[in-house]
Image (cartoon, helix red, strand yellow):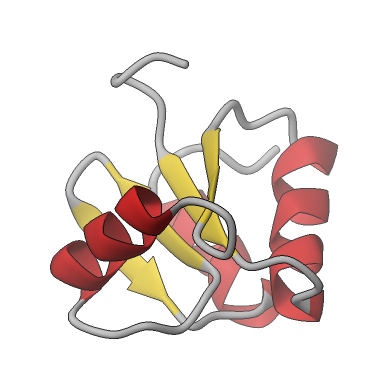
Length: 84
């Protein structure tokens, strides 16, 4: 995956993570998905970026949205011109 894509940090079995993936996919937003449950480096990266350990966390080119649901994700994407 490219470093130019937003990074989505997720945990296995997380319903909010699945919801975030669904919203991004439905709106054809490209992203680099990193599973912090299976990748300790991704977990450390997420904690360093966001200052917390909850997923989903989205790193949108340096702007961090963490511990969110679709209600918070949609306005965030709209603000960045990524929502259809």
